[in-house]
Amino acid sequence: NLTQAPRQNIAIAGETGSGKTTLLKIIAGLVQPDNGEIMFRNQKVIGPADKLIPGHKGIVYLSQDFRLPHFLRVEQILEYANEWPIEKADKLFSLCRIKHLFKRRTDELSGGEQQRIAIARLLIMDPRLFLLDEPFSNMDPANKDLLKNIIEDIGNEFHMSFIMISHDPVDTLPWANEIIVMKEGRIIEKNSPAQIYSTPSYAYTASLFGDYNIIPDQLLSSEKIALPNPGHQSLVRPEKCVIVASSTPSTNANGDANIKNFQLKGTVRAVRYFGHYVETDLMVGEFPFITRSQVAILNPGSEATIGINNADIQTVRI
Image (tube, rainbow, N blue to C red):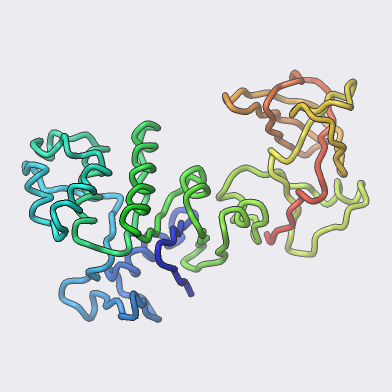
């Protein structure tokens, strides 16, 4: 079951083919569910099997493959769709940063401009729930950040509820109030962004939201740490691992001197600079590990100790 509160932002995550888009279309009334029903504001959302024109007036859906009518001016498209008072619509157009585009034809717009027009066009139909299917795909960073700000502004100004699909955790973690994880057509996990990232129930979920290191049972037993139950494994996020050069055990790569409960000896294979962090690739015996820190203190070939707090080790189902 899935329940959404008013003004709640829900993100749907899952591998390709897991059923994310199908779920959005079922919620919108565009696809008939195999069983069960969708209720919106105490009314059943009627699917296409029982309704000539599918959909629900209070719900709008922006597809990845949206298309605007060709060769019409922007102002014409918006005028035909508008169900809002002029002042309210004008506020929306300002939030969407599109007022300067009114006299242009749709074939004269960039991809980002077309998407902002499409969003405004759907919103002036006066919905209460907006479904967004991969809205940031194929966008450059500047347009992506602009659209994120627009979506946030719209939600705050018009008290809108959103459900969004995105493959990028950078899009969903800071935005969502709740994240739903789908696999093979089923919801397997739902929780707050912090819980989904820090304490996922499944290795599958952990993989959707960033890299992680698997800690083999051999390494856990060597440190006298309890082994996970059958069908489970232990993992830790790279940013929860710190490295220290063997010759300077009192200082770690994050510039502090915290003693970690769990320590492993390894050899540095590579150091990669990513701007706001440095990634260090190590081998602990035959097992690969990566760490992320603010500065690089080691070079390839160096011996190092990886320090991990026991509390940061997650046990997940395989």
